[in-house]
Image (tube, rainbow over all chains, first blue to last red; front, top):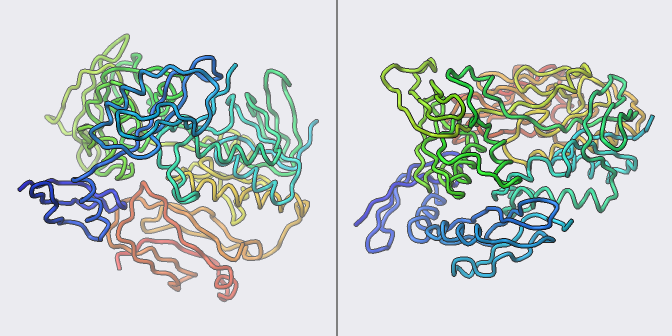
Length: 121
Length: 421
């Protein structure tokens, strides 16, 4: 039996949630004032995910950096591995919003895509 | 002298949305003046996601959100000038601007839309003691350096202020390899969104110290350490609570101020609360034909609301131009914010000029739980909406109906206040 404390991000209330976990299963959520809190707590302790946004070096472009994001959310514990792969990227302009920059980042099955247009010069 | 029906000062989210809506309201001759080398404004450096949930029902990054509006401006064939600094707006709407290709230009505008956005409160406004070494940045400057230019401003970081940009930069600097040691916030609550506190600080184990401020900055050439201390209810440091952090960088995220030098020199009446122009129901300032929208009017929490407001400013400016500035008469009703509500935008309503529904935006001055947002017509309470939580970091609104205002006898004042019951 394990207990974790979380702050709900569902709304500005920011309820302090107490979650009890037994063998990887959520057994109880306390402290929430609405059903969103329970949903958030369950996801957050069993499978927390995040979208990662960053920039990559782009060459021969009208800007020195290209902003990128993971196309969907990735497991939270892979954030730094994703960042490492993003940091290693060197690509050439032009690149446009939605272009795939990394096919399958950190074996998550999720691509990293461009979020800006950088034209070649 | 050049002449345009509508001249828009600023090509960020407010200026872009205002331009598109004015064009769709059948005004052809529109010019956007932007001082940066591209359209999109500060959104271009806000590479994190979370923009556009209200407008597009999806989470976009800043550049993606900006591009949706930029594209509309391109597709509608709206004219714009980049790298162009506006020097002056005269009360009769002659805009003086300057750039490297045209030199100094003067433009006669049928209507002007102010959409200059805001700036960050600088260190000089804080009276922080200590030396003045390199390594002290506003959070937005650091954001531009990291995300646009590709430089990391420092390796060991202390952040003062828990506004959203500070929180976002705590995560961003951490992801790029810097160590963010602490975020200090002078108030007993954070001005940032809960989501940002969880996903930018808690995720990375960065401590947030509420009711703390910076009391010393060390280092002559470059920051070497920062000392923070707890503050009492009077916001004065409590002796004995000092903690010293060695670091090479101090980021400041201590508030935003609408950028209104041009509005002031034009003679626009300003609100001492918002530091933005005083506007009527049409988002028109005290100078007829000069409109304002976005963060130059009042600092917004979400860009979605900026776009919404700017759309109305664009439509109203188009209407003004098409009516050739003809006055629509009618009694002016004053809006008053009191008992916890700090201000309202707009400040006045002429019922003959208002739309069927009017969104009045405001902010509260403190955190309230289970309180009511109340609206009074003269002395009669006409709205009483329960809110589970109200916080200074979030914009609130009430929606007023034209029919109700028009039918209320002898209406002089509409008051917005926060009530416990």
